[in-house]
Length: 115
DNA sequence: AGCTTGACTTTGA
DNA sequence: GTCAAAGCCAAGC
Image (cartoon, rainbow, N blue to C red; front, side, top):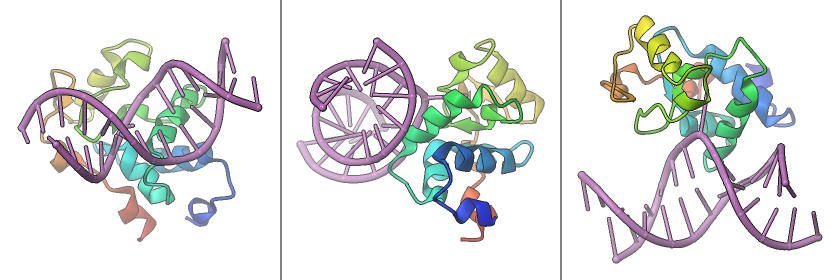
């Protein structure tokens, strides 16, 4: 909570903190995370953070997709289909690299932040 | 030091 | 509805 409000911390740590807060079976978008951090336009940086997130294993990166609900980062996983399988395991149906009813599974980090 | 790239989003046509 | 272009900031070359 308080750590999320502190922008003095590294952008990466902020991103990881939020991604870890994503509930089981829920997903969110890069832009939503960026917005929760106060930098709505630097959604690309969230993607960069996720790239480095590979070193952190407690990061459910499969719960983060782009705004279209498309699994854009699937190829960055150990296996391209790993992301889709993980999501299906959590009850999130995926078809053609895209989340079905994305708006229903969408979780807004702003809610958790209380904003 | 500058230039390019990127797990993106928004806006305008 | 789709497509193209701009904006964003950090890391890598």
